[in-house]
Length: 549
Image 1 (cartoon, rainbow, N blue to C red):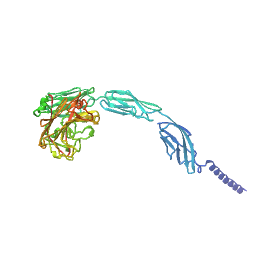
Image 2: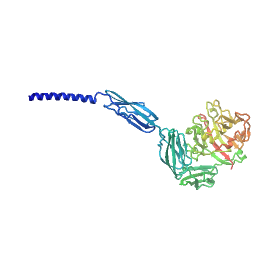
Image 3: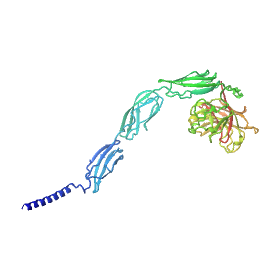
């Protein structure tokens, strides 16, 4: 009896266990059902601000996806994380997905993205020093369409379209500048604390220079931090300094080595430089008759080419040289290479480096803004060359002068050129002996061009150009005269209030009033140039300029 009861209880327990397991498997559905999305069905974000949303689901989802997201948001399909920075405003209905091995569950998210004004993200404090060029870029979120800056120091300007603040720092102090960035949804504002300190000047001009007694000399003191005045203690007799501009000029009356103490001062203090000036005796030269006839009795420029040291071979652009090699502004940041010139036995030999419009070396440093420039004078050079080398070349021996201002800034209105002598051949023949001396009046970006009509004279066929000859030009207000070995060949009159006589070649006839008068008014005078073709060397014994005492 007891044995039968135990057996019945065992059978009942086994059946009950089987029923319990079956009931639970059906109830939990863990292993054979697709996921169900359980994350929020609505959310909000703001344009330009970081946003994140996590897709959640049941039943061990192994991958996720979302479609219909606004620009700037993306979904990680492995984790279900949606994040990024929305770029567009509006209401977006986003379809959500979660998948496992049994299927895919779907859901939706109604995402409201609100518009936003810019938020300025650039630095809130800047320190700089007076005299520097200041650049500050306003940066901001949410695509600003315009910018503003209130309270900028003097000389600083804002580009309202780009947010760039730029200019020279001209005053010191602490400035609170209110910056703003605006789009169609509003304006973001930030205060910039700008501190401008003042430092003493630092003199940057050359520490050595040389001059010739009795010949005009100039030296410009250059310094940082906006000096308000300058001084030079220990200058030789005959030289003076303009204490407002820092320009030293004059003609020294004594020779020797002079240790000059240069100074540049601003409200923060004084910067000093020990400057060595060597004054050598002036070369002796008889005044040519054409110069004497108009009172040009002072030798203001002279190079006998006893040494190459009068040429700025290294391209330093310092003021102690007679000749410089930096190219005009339209020639790019280039210099004439050393193989275009040499000095030996008191003779300069000059060609050009490739075709360079007969421009090898010049008397003024275009980028250094120092050297020798002229308005009026008697200009002469002693030159020789082989006339049989004129075939198949583009350049030719030339001794000429050109506008300093146009060389430096490439202005488009009007500028002057004065050619003392050109051995022009056209590039196809031996040199014929035509003395070409020309004055040019260039206008309107070279679209209008005048030059004197009788700009050449045929020299005698017996002239030996392999021998030395003096090529000269006399320039006085209203008249230019060209000479060969002291004999007048060509004369050109001009006036600001009357047409030139003889007439000029040009696009308008008769020649308008004022042609060639740009020579008298070109802002910075003219510089001297020597040059030729690379296959046609020109030798120069000396170059001299006489001007009024």
